[in-house]
Length: 206
Image (cartoon, rainbow, N blue to C red; front, side):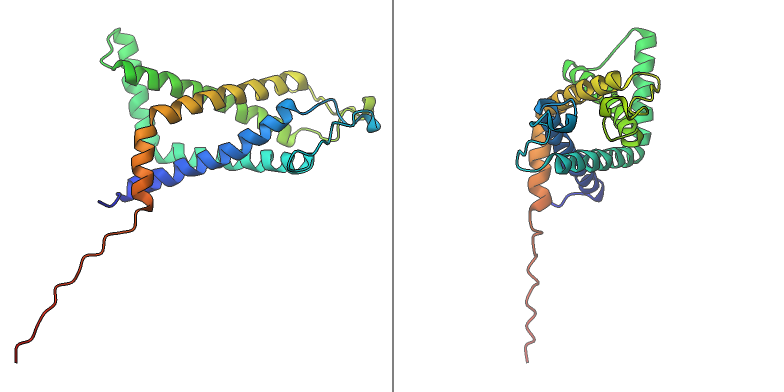
């Protein structure tokens, strides 16, 4: 049985988010564990330690993986906007009435989705800060614009970006497990070759 056009598009969008999140997530792990504090004129020899790639390559992977993830998520959100509005109204009405007909599984799924949405928003906003913020390191005070102090200090933005990313990674793992049966079934059918129907042989009797 072939997948519908809507299901195929959903799978493509989900796969795009998944792959870009893997790139951004695993490159983020590099920066989470690799020594920080800048090159310090050579006093921090572990600053540019090579783990498969150089630090600058990991930086590019993290940057463009994150940009790709944000763009695909925006497309995903726009495509499902009617569903988002419908579910928001439904949940809000249930909260106001104090009555809920949602199953335990649906509530768990909703909680995971809320964590994903919140952590993704924080991670994306803080990522945009670093995308457009001054670079080049503190340079011992020579780079006065290193911390422009927009809303928060650069250190606070860094903490927001780091731990929202960790929360996003964990919540996405739970999301993956909750929907594993759908992912497995749809992925198998997505790559399954179409069934060719044999054309009946018409014999012309002379």
